[in-house]
Length: 147
Image (tube, rainbow, N blue to C red; front, side):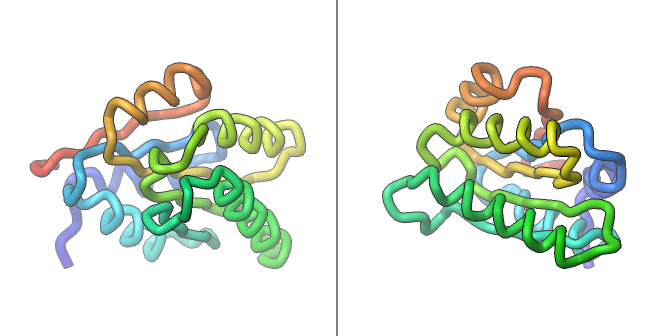
């Protein structure tokens, strides 16, 4: 099975202690989803993947629901010390960056080890949210058709 050149970088980030939100950004159909799903199969950490592609009305409650699923699965997966939450096409959700910031900060204060990965394909919407709300909380991995 083909693995993108960035595969090992993503694996390394998922295996690190929780420090930053990982953001995989790139144009549609460049392989972001395939890359993260391959990585989730490789790491030995429980995870939850959800896509915002079909979320009605761009409802921000969807992010909170997915985050709560991750929190519950983390509790159920004891003695797991970490959990990976992947939210695909995040830019489709209204006010996504503010919601992610609030939930990330709650988990940081509560010492909840949910590692978060955001995937997005709209550079303008992603960049705006990252700069305005998530400054200092994320690490960006850019994908293109060639990497």
